[in-house]
Amino acid sequence: MRALLPSLRVISRREWAVLPGLIAAALLSGCIDVKVPTYQRPDTPEKTSFTKIDTAKVAASDTIQPDWWKQFHDPTLDALVEKAINGNFDIKVLAARIQVAGAQIGEARAGALPSMDLGAGASFEKTTGQKFSKQYNLATQVSWDIDIWGTVEKGVQAQKAEFRATEADWRAGYLELVALVSTTYFQILQFDDQIAQQQQTIATNQQILTIFEGMQKNGLVPKTQVLTQRAELNRLTRELLELRRSRDLANNALSTLIGVPAGEFRMPDGKLQKRVQVPPVPGGLPSQLLARRPDLIAAEYRVLEAYDLVGQAKLAQLPTINLTGRGGTASFQLTDLLKMFTLSFVPSINIPILDPSVRAHVKTTEAQTTVAEQQYRSTVMNAFEEVENALVNLDSHTKQRVELQQEVDQLTVVAAQIDAQLKEGVISQLEVFETERTLLAAQLALLANHQQILSDTVTLYKALGGGWPMVDVQSASKDTTK
Image (cartoon, rainbow, N blue to C red):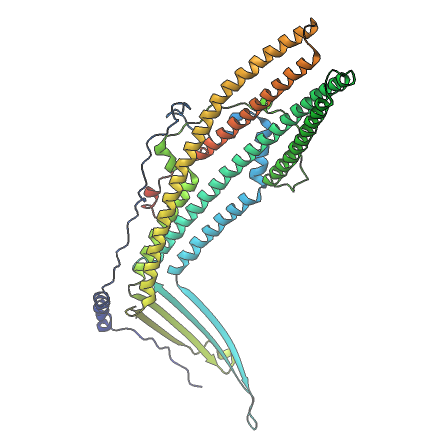
């Protein structure tokens, strides 16, 4: 067989010279807009102060520590948070999404690299009256779409922004998880205190019922008073059952948060006021809020991603150049396969003059940018509302605590005086029980207020960003190396 000589087609200088003219003609005839937009943070209503910032004593110099939950000085809470961080499946999902986003950066970057295919084959043929024939072939192809306009790089930058947004999503999920663990833990301790006080209230009312029954036998009180007291005991017992149900549900929620099947973990009984201290109110400047909250950072990075996708779509309107090299060989003998081969080199240019899908994609990405900007503005407004609500709740509950504490103190004095009068025989045991019941109700209200203040503090820590470092997305948009 005659050997096939290598052949290589090279574009002449004249052919290369016409390429700029073709590109210019394509741009002029289409009147396309290929200006890549420069990122600007979406404008939002200004928020320079909070209504309760002075009342709540939020200092501008204060900073939130990353492990802010340790400010409650409760080792049990610290251990639960650690279990949740290591075992919660929702936070693991968010971490896995970071890995996906990181891999997609490499996938986007691969679009600027050459690709190579290699194939081999063999054919066998037998025709009647002819000898058995066989042929072997080997072929390869290298293709490279040159990213002369930076189209692929824009896609890489968009994916990097999505990666940063996914990281911020994880931080937001982390912050939400710690807040949920903390507030659920406080609720369980509150239920424990309420159950103990409810049991004490039931015991007191049982003693009152015994007194009424004795008085009714002696004709001192009507039977309706005895029945009314029994109904009161029924109500108190029903409330106790409801408290235990709520405690079990909160315990199941905490189990799920720490990554343990519901029913396989039980939080030991405890007392809220004795175990958990109210920490100082966290500080935070309104100007720092936008750069500190993970959900705002994620929303802004997605605006940046949308800008990059618009740039990529606009650059896709420009001509593209592809270099393709092919090589192959064929032989009837396997030993002669590498002795004869062909080579070809084929540069090509693609000018999207009449491709409506390209321009339609530009409009789609521009519309998606508008959506991302509006979502960012909505997230900002919700953040301001969360901070305002947290400050209002904390301020109101703190003031209510003063009144409740005074109420408990005054009723404690009354109870002591009533007890002294009982010893002197001035009053009956029934009046003592009534006073104790009133005092228990006030103590229960004070306990609920303590839990509210703790939860309000957690909410404020969360609303102010939970100690995560500030991020300037505007500066990050100018750095394409990260």
